[in-house]
Length: 220
Image (cartoon, rainbow, N blue to C red; front, top):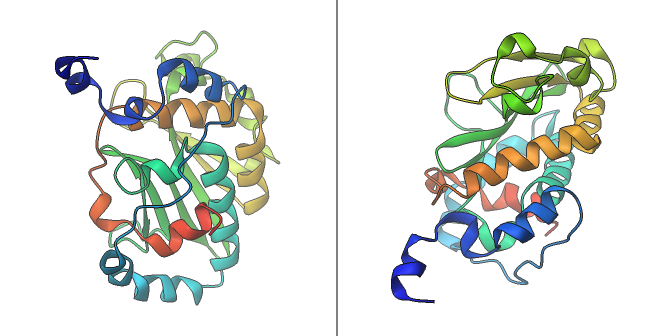
C-alpha cells in the first residue's frame, strides 16, 4: 500500500476492514482485539475522584453492569480503540447531569442517568433503522418496532435531534435497557451507529475519558 493510500484511511478502518465490520455488525464475527490497553496513569488519576463519587451513588452497580454489557457487545475492538476512537466520561459536567456518557468522533453514543434509585438510558442511533421503509422520514417511524425492543412499551420514548439520519431513544429501567441491548434489532442499530462514528476519525472527547469506568466496560 502506498503512503498516499495509507493517508486516506482513518478511524476504525485503520484496525478493521469494512468486510470485517459488516460481519461484526451482523453478529457473524468476533473481531480480534489487542491484548494490552494503551493507558496514561496520569490521565487515569485525573478522573479517579469522579469515579469514587460514582461508586457512592445508589445507581453505581446497575450503571457498571450495563456498561460492561455495552462495552462487550456494542464497541468493536474496544481495547485497540480505547480513548482515541471512543471514550466514556464519568459524571461529566453538563447541564443534563449524566452518570456516564460514551462518545465517538464528535457524537454522543450512549448515556446513563439517575432515575430515582434506578437508571435510564439515552441511545443516539440512525433514524433509518427505525422507519418502516428505511427512510429518513420521521412520519415513517415504526413505533411498534421500538416498543418491541424493550421489556415494556411504557419504558421507552423517543425524540429527533438535529442532524441527518439521527434519532434518539430513551429507555427507563435496567431491565428494559438490557432487553434493548440484547434484542436483535436494537443491538444491530447500536452497532451500525457506532461504526458510523468510529469510522469518522479521532474521538473529540478523549480528554474526558475515565479509565476507571472503562475498566468495567472492558472486563478489567
